[in-house]
Image (cartoon, rainbow, N blue to C red):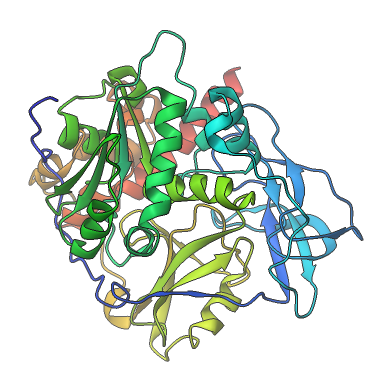
Length: 443
């Protein structure tokens, strides 16, 4: 075991704001009248529909299949009739292909009969195939297909499985509730992942502001595996892969490389629990925990939400909006994105819905950069946000690439500390998209 610093350099300390939902137990959201399942709700190629309008599907039935290795299938979250397949508002602000299901009235949590194999008797390849078929993705927000992480590139060896229970974003408490209410499921998911990866060690990183979660995971630690709980200092973005690897095993991932290149695989604790659930029940990823919070919603809480539930139905189940509600953010306030349409559905990667009121969503004047250097001191990957911002304003996107724009993870630390209110992170996101278009035009 290496000397563990339990820390990383730079980062910021935004207000935690988790008190609205931190102690609230999970409650299940009733089925809405309609579910909308975007085909693109994971990193990689969108799923390909295999149903037609008018088909009846049962809860758990596959409605779209994976289209390539970096892709996962999509399943019906409730029983009903396929009412349409077409464009629908997507959480990223675009219109994207989606499958709409008219949910049967009084639909039960009933599925077709399933054979549930004992995971202990399966080979690594069979375990990976089962995880893929279950449609499991990273539930921390990025929604990267989990099965891809379970197959290291040839020649790479994984020493450590690092389970990310940090949940460093303000407001959000989904991972906290997962660890508090399903610790045994987390431990089973760890077993399955360690078998797939051949990893000898597992470290579960949890920030110290989650004492109940720390106790729950420590209480259920296995005796026959090298699994340790590592309480971490509260600092944003502690849950980012590179930061967590540095804090837990003191290894640095070089630019352009992946965690597996330094012998580690990082997985969100929610995804780990979902892997276990797939082998316990035989069901694919049909629902996820979503934190609905903020001063702009009447009854904040942590809910088990069917994938495809529209925001308006989710917010109605939480008592609706307060008169002062002004902005709805999907995800946390640091890396999340505001939405303008309540018909946007909850996707597999939706961690939270934060409703901000007048006090937290005021417009601010963007002032000229004063070259104070605060953004350099905050950037956890040691970029020069001030320089990148100047290049972004000038539209010199290709030159930004020369200054390691690809390394930027859009954590928002630079925007948070900027006294001139310059939206640096948002500018970098636009620049990344512009670079993608430039490269596509050349190919």
